[in-house]
Image 1 (spheres, rainbow, N blue to C red):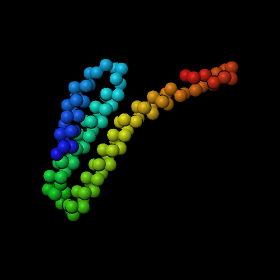
Image 2: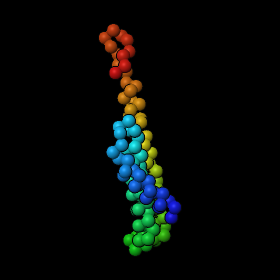
Image 3: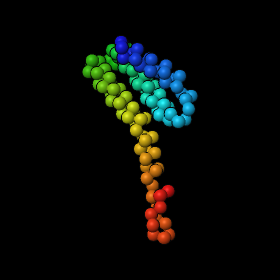
Image 4: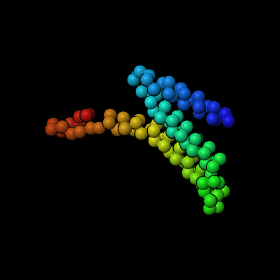
Length: 107
């Protein structure tokens, strides 16, 4: 229950902070992480309540497997949302090229 309250509060805060100044450039990535967490939490809750009705074959094991898949996807997507822009920015800043003089110039 506390996780749902925390996630709902974070979703409201992420929605309110979407028009923040560009100097706080991490807010849009944090908001995307909160939205993805909220989506996966909603999927897990729906699967918990309606999993037996939707999945008919050996439902206990299949529901547990799908729940595990949702948790894994949530963690991987969260890491991708947060770290991909940082890696892309670091890669763009560390690009070097050789000039005609034989020296290494930073692009």
